[in-house]
Length: 159
Image 1 (spheres, one colour):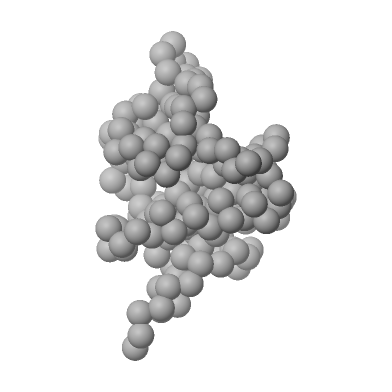
Image 2 (tube, one colour; image 1 turned 90 degrees about the vertical axis):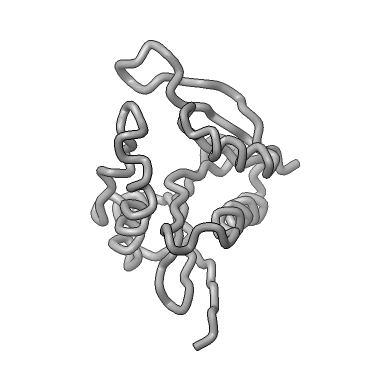
């Protein structure tokens, strides 16, 4: 069987697989993030509700099996992405970059001026990846109950 990778827009029918992919991909962060990632609370029902309310997702499938995904929604004049998830067995193949490229292409298709994301302060490898792709820090914020920044907001202009 050929090794075929397909990136496509998610449908409501993908909600359970998206939730499972996020859970598996974020497991490496369990116990590393304070507060704990909201990704651990993602459910198929919550993702289906997001998709039904106008948010979107891009899924990556290799030979028909989901190996990655990213959630998206419009924020002001930008496209925001979150829950960028690549299964452990698919890492090191450039899939995260392919998903981000797909997000940027979708933002351009919609005529939006940029792409935004949030990344935890402690995840310096992720910050490095985003910086290498042209994203710059625009602000820092604290999760509820914290008096110091726990998250960095980043943006890439597309104009």
